[in-house]
Amino acid sequence: MDREVFLITIVLLMVSALSFASAYEFQAYGYVTKVVDGDTVWFHSYYGYKAGETFKVRFADINAPEIYTDEGKESKAALEWLLDTYGRYVYLDVDDIYGTDRYGRVVAVVYLPFWYYGYALNVNEWLVESGYASIWDHYNEFDPYSWSLWVPI
Image 1 (cartoon, one colour):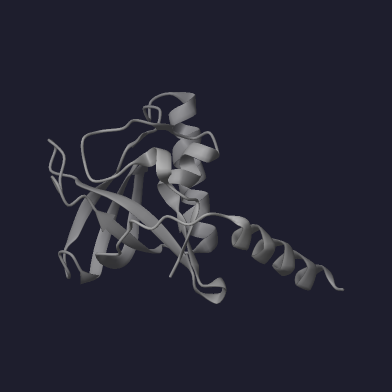
Image 2: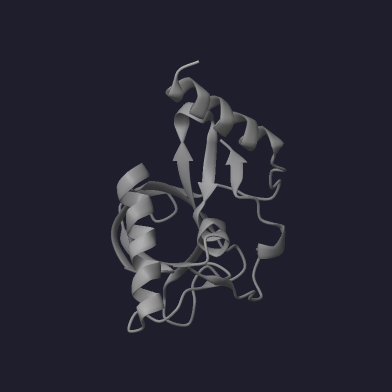
């Protein structure tokens, strides 16, 4: 078995072993135009929520270190790496209770689709599991303690 087939097989086995979240909805599809820090991006919506608009998105229920710290710079770099490596086209699951935070940023869970495999990566959860952010549970529709790293698309 060649290396590529082996790696694909391992990834598929890992993904199939995961339990998937049942409570998510893709309300917008668009492009991340800029990473602000480890938990905030600029997003241009192509479809769905605020289609045609560009706005700031605050990742729901996580908190990355402040950008002026070494850990904050590392968190931002990790998010940029993820999006530069696997694509900046993402889905948003926007908070249905408030929609925005006190600074006017759209609060959402961000999903990075891996079309070939039929799954999307929960970027919020990836940041937490990778050690670049921590859970910061707010009153909203989301329960970060029940998130799955991968969801079917």
